[in-house]
Amino acid sequence: MSTSNPSQPIVLITGGNRGIGFETAKQLAERGFYVVLASRDPSKAQHAADQIQSGPGTATSLLLDVSNTDSIRHAARHFATLASRLDVLINNAGIYPDQGVNILSIPREKMVDTFQTNTFGPLEVAQAFLPYLRQSAAPRIINVSSGYGQLDGLSPQVPSYCLSKLALNGLTIMLAESLRPDRVAVNSMCPGWVRTDMGGPDATLAVEQGADTATWLAAEAPHHHTGKFFRNRQEIPW
Image (tube, rainbow, N blue to C red; front, top):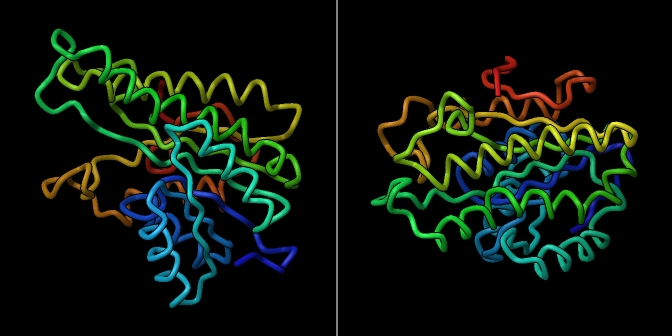
């Protein structure tokens, strides 16, 4: 399925088939966005797109594994069959694999795996989809980060996740500066502690609350906001 409405805003959400990604997709679909749900599991992505399609929204799925260069490049080529531009890219896909390790015991391989998904993936996806973003009148990139990526939030008990999100925030700053000539707004956001598969059942926020800032950055925030970090629609320190 492709969009035939030239005025309909288009958003691509990685890891969009569940959790905060899917909730963000639903919220943006309700606001009139054409939603492209990207996931490494095509059946789950299509099921999520069908759920949105069953309501008032429009959506489709896209096979994309953010930890794999070939998958990213193939997805970027395939995107041309769906749309000629991209208005919003939300780098939401992420992993949290630090159970049972700390900064003194985590093996290099686990660090590499986390960075491949949480940091290198968002960079490579942004690079691959930049030609489509440049076709938008007001393009935006939103990186889903975490308070664990703040300098005063780093925990030695959550080593790979914290460091990968810290690096993702650094990536946000660098992309924002590099893409100013292209008018691409680039920001990080922290959803808070959200009741998802990653956050667990004891988290303090509902998924609707966790997705709110990403939705706001995609649909409502002033476009001149760039190179910043947000939580609850408010700027927070790096």
